Length: 385
Image (cartoon, rainbow, N blue to C red; front, side, top):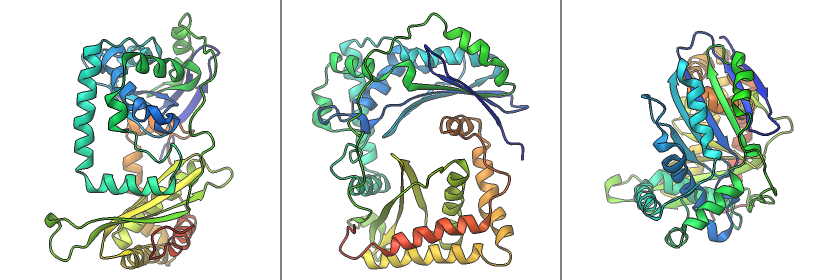
């Protein structure tokens, strides 16, 4: 496959600009990542990063509409907030202008704040009804207990109820600074526009003031592995068992980069193909958090099911036809997913743009072997250090 070409240009008074050349692409993906998320929130601010995301779209991005095209998508995570939009190639510079307006001064009318808080309460209720979402948050909370990484980006209801327009304005002014942002253009001949994109930033406000201090700056996982479960529901059917989850955290290897990320993504697909268990992973503060969610009667049964799936995938990869199986069951589906322009733009913010043409089955098997060892440490009692 043709690997996208990535060019980057840091600006003295502006965000880091990244261009990803995707020859022949008829559309353009434009993205702005601001390096602030729920892990940066202080105890009385839980949920504020997500509130600011909503208000940035409403007040600074004019609803997120780029010309007559699509609305911008916005998401808040634990370590960053991303704004992205897919547009016609000719509209890419205008789309970048729309998204980088997020770094301007945020003014919030009281009625707008009230309306967005109501929307967030509805979103929170919908997420609370999602068993997988609740279990995922319970697992991450267990791994990061006692740190700002433990709470959900959706925040705490009591904090949101007490928010004022000044709270929102101060949080935005503290974190939404050019030096904390990365702007990405993924398009045909994108690198040729880097100079023009830098020029468009000239003259905009660039003073950063005092650096913001993250509440999660010293965070480390409280435990290395955990087991959590939710009670069985009537809708699950007789004998379905509880919604069970296993999670563990391991330090990312030195020099961990796009190839290692791809190996983890392929390991996840391989385990699902060979054993029917979906493994999820997320890198936070140099720690790779991995978790699996399934239905099982207890921790012992859940652990056995996950270990059986991991072993089946590892043995399949190391078989004589392991390379062909990996391509068919994992690599091709993975390539289809990351060929998406918006996915390409998101990957570029982390230093990668496209996966390698091939990945060693033994490297993917090594990732799965590591997951097997970590899963073996989860005991029936719940948490294991």
